[in-house]
Image (cartoon, rainbow, N blue to C red; front, side):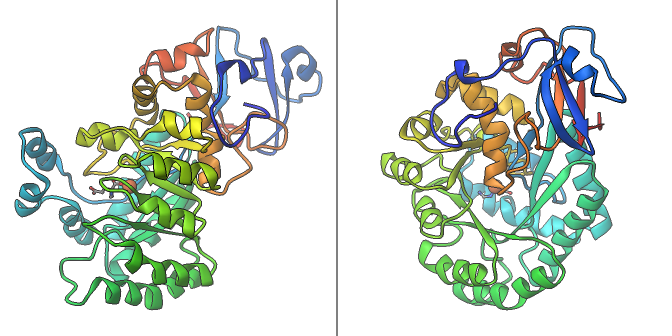
Length: 394
Ligand code: NIG
Ligand code: FE
């Protein structure tokens, strides 16, 4: 994926394929990519793969909620039996159910859950993973989640990028207004995020059931004054969030299942990465993000798993990306770019996602002679080896 643009449609002919290749790694970073015979002479230690194999960059999963307690299998069953969102919420389901269960978990139990799930992602080739809070929804409980994510990050082989999603919904036990909740979080949570170095990123769910654009504006303004980066849960059920993402120059606008041509063009004109979350479409039985339209209009498209207990319980990023590709007609180059360097851009990471000199030595090997087999098997062909910072991690 050397020299591919960050935005717009891609053709498979734009991919660089090196036969009989080698990767020279030094101190966790790629020192050179080229012919094996040439590179062999420069290496002190050589690991050779003699069978048919394709090596590609490690995946970057730029949107997950893998810090949580409990299960929402009952929501899933009710939804598939025809119950409405409201009926499920009345039966005690929805985001609030996970909040209740997450609040009951100890920090230690949350850490174990994150590490278990991040390890499963690693085995599927994810070498960098973003993890959000958002099931705490009080200062103390959001801090518990973010501290758990920070501790898990220190213990994990993968890089874990943390995001604060205290603006996931107005907690049901908050007696004031949505504005007052956000103001409380901005005033009393943000400074602790800074002082404990818990995250650089602030996310919000812009939706009728969560926060309006008007309510979120002072919250994002405050976050930016303190130097945080912004990302948005946008246009999932109704359009509006992508305008907020563009107005605040967010790193990414995620979901976009309900985006119309207007939002597509808005995003395409901006530098906001459009992140499709096919796992949520598959989990909820909703439309897919208009990925084809976004790319054709010139947007940058990342693909992430949204792995969470409610809308996206599956968590297999490659399977989800391949299904998105069949419905939206995405080239292999667009899928692979969306899982690697374009996803890295959504996390403001320029040091990974491409196999070239100077980038992190995060890559994986599939036992096949043809790279097209990777998407063809829709996730059933799994990496036989995954390398993180040049070390074999799986
Ligand atoms: O990204 N859209 C809002 N938040 C999550 C769902 C969280 C949940 O249902 O627990 C999402 O899909
Ligand atoms: Fe999400």
